[in-house]
Image 1 (cartoon, rainbow, N blue to C red):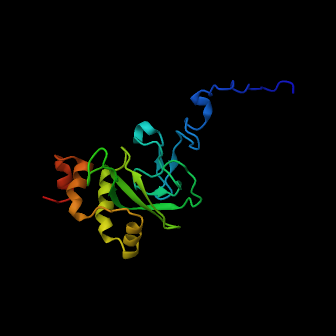
Image 2 (cartoon, rainbow, N blue to C red):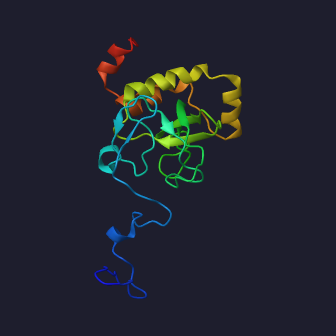
Length: 185
C-alpha cells in the first residue's frame, strides 16, 4: 500500500505510553475529558476531574440527576439501561478504615427511573450543597417500596436525626448563611 501510514507495534514487553492507550491506563475504563448535557435539566456538565474531584462523572452538579451507566463498579459503563436516575437521598460511605463507625463521606443515593436499580455515587466537589440538602430533606418522604428496596440493597439512607452531620459536611460548622437561608435558628 503506497502512502499508507503504518504504526509499528510496540516492542514485546514494552507498554505503550499512557496517552496512546485510550483508556486512561486502566483496562476496561474509558476516560474522557468531554462533558455532557444533563438529561433532566439540560445543563452542560463538565467531566474534567480537577473541577469535580471525581474520576467517573455521571451526575449533574446542579440538579444531581444521574444516568444509569455503571453495572458492576464505578466507571465500568456497562449498564444497558442508560435511563435517568433520580437522586432520592443520602447515605454515608460504608467504610470504617478512615473515619470509624457511623462516620464517612456523604454519598448520593440514585434510583433508576426504568429498571429501579439503586446505586450510590460520591458527591463531587462542584455539586450544589443546597440541592443536596433539599434531597436529604425530601428523603424522609420515601414510599414504603423504595425503603424496602434500600434495605434489601443494604443502603442506609440518612434520617432526620442525622441532620447535624449532613449540615456539618455540606456547609461547615460555622456557616451562618445556611442557618439564615433555612430558618433553623
